[in-house]
Image (cartoon, rainbow over all chains, first blue to last red):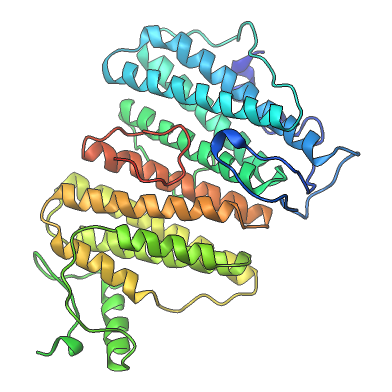
Length: 200
Length: 216
């Protein structure tokens, strides 16, 4: 995957979640056990959006979660690869964020399995841009995190289960917190906007 | 002066001059006059925990998108008031004052956005803050605050309560746009938390899933 092109192209970022015609449906009987969800099946999602093809709510959720998992795998690769250029507080933050992305990936994989799906595996390699120093890594991480936030926000109402939506919001908030730390490390305004929209 | 007639403003340093606090005081005085709000001057510890529980309960009881948004507006009004109170406390240094002012402006933007959303749903937002017990809790909390760290810790509790409420809201909201707006606000409160935690040397991002569960 050419990550740099992906990050520079808002249309492909938006389509990341939409490619297979994710629509809004209702009625899923499972929930994100890894994150403590608990509840009855419920018709939900945006309700007004288009319903596509004959996908079951489970298939739709699996697709969305697998797409999110792809992003988490990418973030894990980025923080793993970027760590060697970080030092001090930035390195400590990078390590913590790597663990968080791994936890997200683990939670998503568990949810996908619970839904009867097969979690996507990480790619063997990612075509990241050349990173030469700590500032490059921090800037790239901000881009990746913002991209993930925008993608999760797009996908959130399309998930059929309230518990999945709440978990997605908890991940969005965690990624937004990462952004605040990264911006601080870059000497920038840590909370530039009242509404976090990511980059999309 | 009888406490029942007195505004309970614990001004630490100088006059309180923000419109938000003035509005709180005028509302409160009016409510006290009408016998709706209690006028006692209880001194509480500087903790937002009771407030946190109350906010969570309000969200748990709200049914339907309009009621949830109305609860959220109440939370944002509390936050606007809290940051205005922090700015006027006389405790904050210049940089922290800038941050508190910025965060207060964010909370106001949230309130304005939610009010517009509620009106779009056909609901009518309250003209003034009506959650006086919550505002009193904030007031008392700041009355006890003596240092920047006190204020930051109090704000951490408030922001955490807000995140927990927005997390709960994700379980209930139906409208796609409201779900996204709620998550977007929740993420902003998370970013506030990062700055506040760093100010008191706590781990800035202690959990991989930010649900508003209080962490030490």
